[in-house]
Length: 256
Image (cartoon, rainbow, N blue to C red):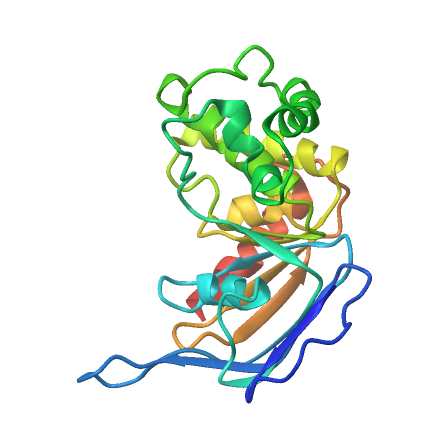
């Protein structure tokens, strides 16, 4: 069931039923006792079509993670409405449980959903081969490279079975070489397992390589200052003309 969150809170109803996301005039402010209120988002309106990949870029503190948490229903807006198909969040850190094997970490959402360990492993196992993790099913997280840990975390997100994936800087902790490899891997993974994706990143080039559309936010409180269609088929390379053009336009919007 899709959900609608608004202020004041109303009952969920079916919206964005085909797997999309709609935020309309959304504002969110955080209050801490003894401090001035901190506005994170102000009047933000964004529509993500079913099956579309949208990357959100902007300066630190402009409400990017807040936007993802609103889409996932982890926060509620102070004003405006959020309409989204069921969504799952992949946070910046992989958060793998150190005492579980890779396959049991990947299958965690299935176990939480009530599936037995054996059945959950059988559901997860084919994806390990498809996503280049075959042979590492029973490795513990400390035995995996950073890129492999991120793959396991992505599989865990994917196996949650939600039509909308919210990815919060999934490669921020990786070195430049591994990050480039993982961008290519993620692009391929989304071809094999298409979903609606909202991707937050600080890397404008990464946004242009992976997304169908790049949304640029202003400094806090976050407002959309540019929406840039990449206009080239995926997969893409950082040197593709369309990627370079969107990268420059996004950087101009950020500077502006």
